[in-house]
Every structure is written in structure tokens, then in C-alpha cells.
Image (cartoon, rainbow, N blue to C red; front, top):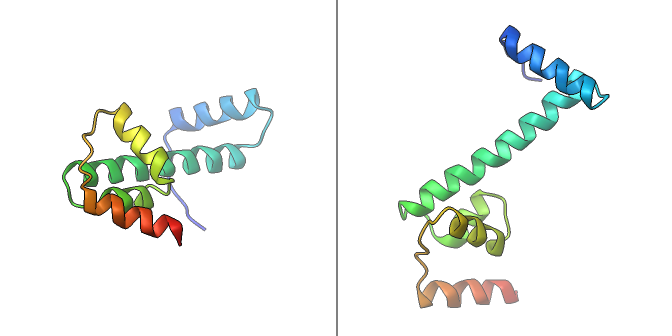
Length: 97
């Protein structure tokens, strides 16, 4: 279990979303938190990949995405691919396992 303090404005917004979706606040908070964490994982992975701290495959793993999906997101954000022939061969062999 995790506890946190929320601003009155954020509590109001959560209540509004819950009412609009005919849901309870706890479910709304869980769904929003899940989406935010997934988004943050993508952003961190993109940053590490852009700085060449991790390989393309490792970045996709950190983002918890299939390689093709991560490549698509990187392209959308104009992050250049640092992908050598050796990396392609390694990823291809791994995909065949």
C-alpha cells in the first residue's frame, strides 16, 4: 500500500473524472497512475537511448514495449536510431529463439 498527499485541486479533478466515468476515485487514481508510470518508463527509455546509454533492444525492454513499438515512438519523437548491423544481427537471433 502507498499513501500520498494530494492537493485540493487534484482531488477535485479526480472526483470529476470519477463522476464522469461513473467510477470510484480509487479506480480512477489507479488507472491514471498506471498510465503515468507507463509514460514515464517510455520517456526514461527514450532519454537513455538518445544519450546512447542503452541499446535499442534494452531501451525497448526498459519501456516495456515490443522493439517495433519502441522504434515507432522513437521515430515519432525524432530520436535518431543508433542501430548497427551487429545490433540488428543480435536482435534478429534473439527474436528467433
